[in-house]
Image (tube, rainbow, N blue to C red; front, side):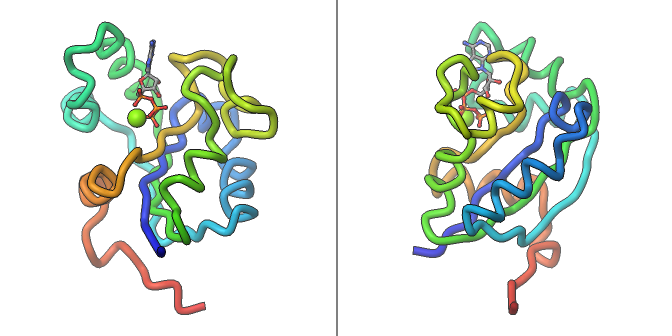
Length: 142
Ligand code: ATP
Ligand code: MG
């Protein structure tokens, strides 16, 4: 089933100049970029994006980290894109991430873990529309 999912290359990975290597892994998996931009989130935007985690003990640190530098946000499309992308991302804690995954190779800690990916179809739709207007999402005609 063709799906779309939201990817964020987080400030640590952008700062380490790993944008290209991360996108290369997505493309090798068959995921297609259908929307992309760089943004520097402010505190309010980051809090809004991570609203589901607002009661968690790490919420404040997560928001602070996400506003330390620009991020690259992308809408990805592909067969089972949500799961395919989460597989290539690896576990939340890079210590637990399988070798060859993005987090195993580019993340330094659970706090600075290189990438975000939507975890369900419902959240993917919400998260994509959080960052992209409909006309910023393109049909991959080739
Ligand atoms: P993401 O939502 O970023 O794709 P995820 O779905 O693997 O990651 P979540 O449980 O949704 O993980 O947590 C969101 C983010 O919050 C994580 O990516 C991580 O940066 C941070 N986080 C999660 N758990 C912890 C924790 N125990 N300590 C510190 N930070 C955490
Ligand atoms: Mg999550």
